[in-house]
Every structure is written in C-alpha cells, then in structure tokens.
Length: 432
Image (tube, rainbow, N blue to C red; front, side):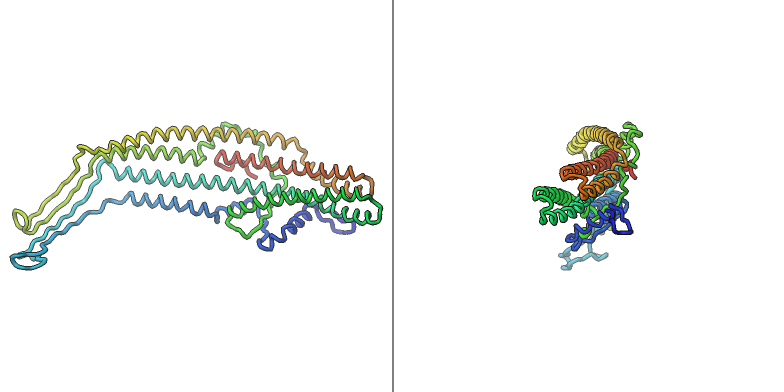
C-alpha cells in the first residue's frame, strides 16, 4: 500500500510479496526461501529428479544387452587323460610313449540368422526403454509445470488476502480504540473483527494448499530444504498464443509423432513381430562343429577326427513358442489401436477445454485487476473518513476477495488447460 507520510512510494505487489515471506517465517527457519522461475525449475528437475535418474539406468541396461546379443558363442575345449595305468602302476600316465589322452574342441554355430534376430530384439528393447524414459519425463514435467502454475496463482491469492488483512488490521485497531471511547458500537467493532478473522481463515486454507504443492515441488526438484516463491510475469496466461489458431488435426498428428506411450506400444508390437521371426528360426537346429585328437585309444595311434553334430527336429520344433508369439502379435495390435484411440481422445478433450478457457479469459478486461486494487485503497480511505458505511465496506471486501480469487483461478485454469494440451500432444507447443 502507499503511505501518506512516506516520500517514497512502493508498489503494493512488492509489499504484499514481502508480507507473504514473513508469513512463512517459521517455515523459512528450517527451509531456504528460493525465488524460482519456470526455466530454472525445469533445469533443476532434469538434473536432480531421482525418478528420472533411476529410469535412465534402464536405457543403459538395455543398450548393454545389445552388446551382449552381438557376441558369438564361445568354443568348447575338452581334455581327457589316463587316470591310472594298471600295467605300469602309474597315475596320470599321459606320456607319449605309454600314456593315453584325448583333446577335442567344438564350436556351436547358430543357423537361420538367430544372432541377427536377437540383435534386432535387443535394439527394439532399448528403443522401448527410451520410450518409457521419455514418457516418464513427459508425465513428471507435466506435474512440475502444473504445480508450478498452481502455486503461483495460489500465492497471488494469498497476496490478495494479505492486502485486505493489512487494511483491516489497521481499521480493527482504530475501531478497538474508538469502541473503548464509546464512539462506535460493539456491534460494528465485532462485525469488522469477524470479517478480519474470516479472511485470515481463508488465507490459512490457501497456505495449506500451497504447502501441499510445495511438498510435491520439493520431491520433483529433489530438494526438501527449500520453500519456493514462484517468479512469473503477471500476464503469462494472457500472453500465450490463442489455441484457436492451431487446428485439432495438426495437434493429433503431432501427438502421433511425439506421444512416447504410443511409440512404446508400437515398438512393443514390433518387438513381438521380431520375436515371432526368432521363434521360427529357433525351430532350426544349430550346428556343432569340432575336431578331436586321440593319442592311442582309437583304431590307430595319434588319430584325428572331424565332428559334426545337429539335433534332429522330430519332436520339438518350437511349436508352442511360435504359436504364443503369434497370439502375442494379435494382442499387441489391439493394444496399439486402443492406445491410438486414447491419444486422439485425450488431445481432442484437452483442445476443447483449452478453447473454452481462452474464450473466458478473453472476455476479462486486462486492466481489471489493477483497477480493483486501486479501488480497494480508495474504499478503505473513504471508510476511515466515514464516507462509507461498514456494510458497504464489508460488501466491497467480499466482492474484492471473490473477484480476485476468480481472476486468479481463471488464469490458472488457462495455464492448466494449456499444460494438459501439451501433455496430451507429448510436446510443449504452447509456452511463454
């Protein structure tokens, strides 16, 4: 408020901000009061959010599986030797003159392109891990931005309460003194005080709402030792581009390309299609190729052999796994269709809500808030000069409170509708 005696005038909003900080003195004793912008909040979120950092490891794990899938089978080396020679009464007789030993080496060779199919499966799995990470990022970022705007407009509402309470506290002190002198009735003094207590109760309720949102912001930003005061332009909601300038069809197309949950469903289908190819390849037996050397246990001394082995697919041709993979493809096709319909529905619903909030906010005079705040000071001064009755004062204060709250709520509704649309599209298209 402006002081009559002071030579330096201070904007009411700055004074109100200072008062709000003082209201949280007890909390600030345990937590640092941090002024934060949306850009700073998103930067801290990307750097410190524990859920995101943990989810990133799934991408690293999946990429490590790609490395594993590219590795070839290890060769197998076998060695057998004489444990006891009874004719010579000698243990471990593997000498060239009298002993016996065998050496063999085999290599499993995968046929039907199993290795390449496993590599493709691992690559698709890594893509699915990335989809899951970016979908989590989309969800948590929406929660961050939604809470950020809600906290801002609640703090704005608290400033409106503070402006009224500050004025009423001065009037209450004056009325208490006048009532003790018999210049005003007890009825008027009590009525004024009840209005003051009602405003304080409403402000406390708003403080509790802010506390709940602050708790969520602290978790998202991984900082339990900060109380966040939101820094944002007052006209942020009005400065956003009009939603009607963007067509619904273009938004749906953008969602198709950017919704990570839809891309995850599509990659899941691709994974199952690749798995079916792998299961069919698994029906083809692998080849064992090897070589053996036998010192003197065969038809001649120092015998060498080439060995080739392969399973005969008479009974197990991987029929069950092939059938299960085929059913899984049909299942995931339905899930992709369902997810596609869900994306379209969410975009359409968010788009209509954003249009509605646009229309309502456009009908509000941008000068309304400033005019109402100036009127509050004028009404207070006129009441103290006894140009207004107590009934007129209380009616105006009720009207001021309701209008300021509704204006803040309307602006918050537009920001929330915009963020919901960004969330539905999967990309921040509308931003300050």
